[in-house]
Image (cartoon, rainbow, N blue to C red):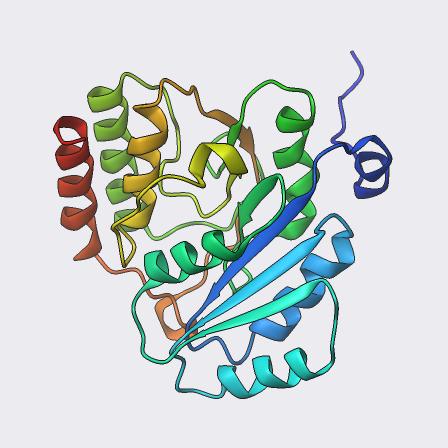
Length: 246
């Protein structure tokens, strides 16, 4: 039996009918943000890249201003004067996005833009308007912190019970949406509760989220990982709240 290989960025590009905006929220990622942008550009699939500086204080803002001054026509940089949270940065980015698909990219090395063709293929083929990249479907990955994995599994299980779904990774960064699915959504999350809120509101529209396997290179706390155990109860409450509140 022949092993099926994912499409290359070149083969995807020749078949593309939908345009892509990549939204990159940034907060204190001075050591990685420029390299992440280069990785996104190297894939060659993003028609528009929007970086949202969420009130960084470590020099990230200076790097983004330099990149902005280079006048790259496909790159836009937006700024929050104060740190508001990842959810707020994504809301800002989505509001400014102009393409057919919105895809979320973190400003670190945990997620690999070379997985974009796998994420985009179900949309190009009309299978689903929402695609999540799962870290638990057999793709290569660096071993995760055990308790982070437990929290993720609990939150994903809660999502499946509350919204009659069978997701394997609700908390993944790699979420891609057809613009019409999310453009008119009111997202109130300002922090990491963005993930459960947007998932809940997509599922309540009756949309079945399509999952694909992705690679994962999780970083350690000393490398700048920001999500904490205290975010898990907030995420769980968000899932419960939006199950019963319109």
